[in-house]
Image 1 (cartoon, rainbow, N blue to C red):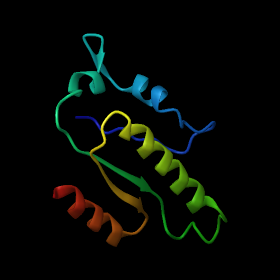
Image 2: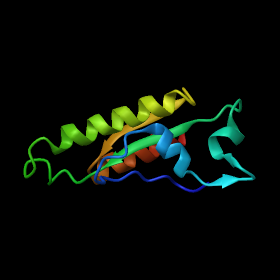
Image 3: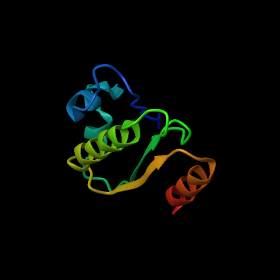
Image 4: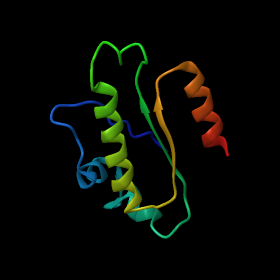
Length: 102
């Protein structure tokens, strides 16, 4: 299954409906429609570099807020979300990988 990457774009893509519309479709159905009713887990994480946070005041908080909004929107379609939060160091990447393996 392809990964969906939501980056920092202008204007921010915070509308979950727009994200769902951007998902690939098959036979007129979105991935969400094809999997509705099936038990699935969705892994979510944000990506950044911890060295940026001191340089750009408020950036971590802004991105973390966007990640939270995205998670809440996805929960409307599938409440079984596993969140690794903001992955901004190699150690956090390993921790996220281990979390998603469970």
